[in-house]
Length: 442
Image (tube, rainbow, N blue to C red; front, side):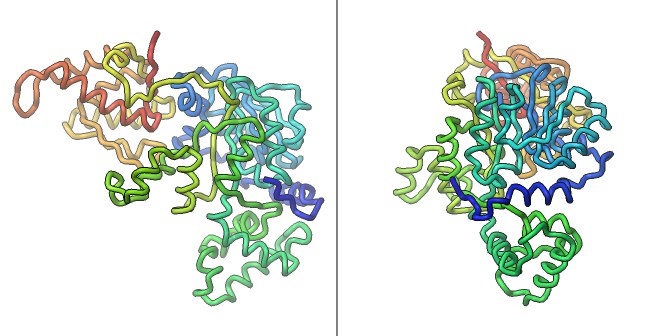
């Protein structure tokens, strides 16, 4: 994990780069507060449920945005976690000032921001329920020091979201960075002159040249920030899945989940997951999580970030996946709708589908652009009480039976078993993406 650059002043270069160009450059008044995908990821409820199969209240929680930059992610954290305290740190003094201004501008007052390196986190004298270290670790001279510092200030059940650049996915950008280092463009703090030299160089290459084919995208022609964050990014380094796990073990942390876990499913890479070559069919069921993620990365390195949630080892209570629950488990279950799905738009779509007797397409409302979920209109309207408060599974089942007392094809009364199976199937699919959160009571 120790991929130190020979330049001992790299941290100063990074600080200078972000003092000059705080990231992101979003205007102070910009706020896409209806972006369900980003709010879903930044909501503590999501990762906590994945680890404990329980729902947590965000009120009173203390959340750290480590490497807060200009504060846009801090704003997401504040919006996604009502009544939580937001603390932000960054090595860039200019960025910290902008972050504080941004949150105050949008009405969030329970905030604190400090110009401080992640490695010095213990100096704050605070412990955190959640730490967001997004797009930060790969810039540190030694990411392991950052992980250890965060681990030291994490509460026992706390969760860290962090990520590393993938060396396999970004291999072409690292070649480009090496090229522009040879040209002397990264000797100091890259500015407009260096940006224009990058543009001139890439434009001068033939279109079929591999570096141009794999890295040069239309936005780079006008977007200075993208050039800085890819071709001239001071301190940028890449890592692999085995290196990520090695760092977690060295920092005494354990993986909870990849942040976009639904996009890391190894079985999705095969044409016929149920009919694999004999070697894979025998070995994959026995593979560890690390081995499965490593195989995915080798076969299909599409992810720029190795984006993960982690926490202290042995803090999660063991639980049975919902897909394996028996009848008695469901009878004692309590069902929540994820807060980021409690939108008036989704509720209106449910009502429209019911009145028009058509299935509900939830795809446009989900924080997963590549997932498609269609619900029977009766099942959809059965979930409406979840907008007010969590419901027992039994109450949802009773509502379903009232709404569909007869089979629409045979006109015969529906059996309790048929009703149960339909509702369980719908809830299990939604729970697999943590859209509904299902807790066993007692």
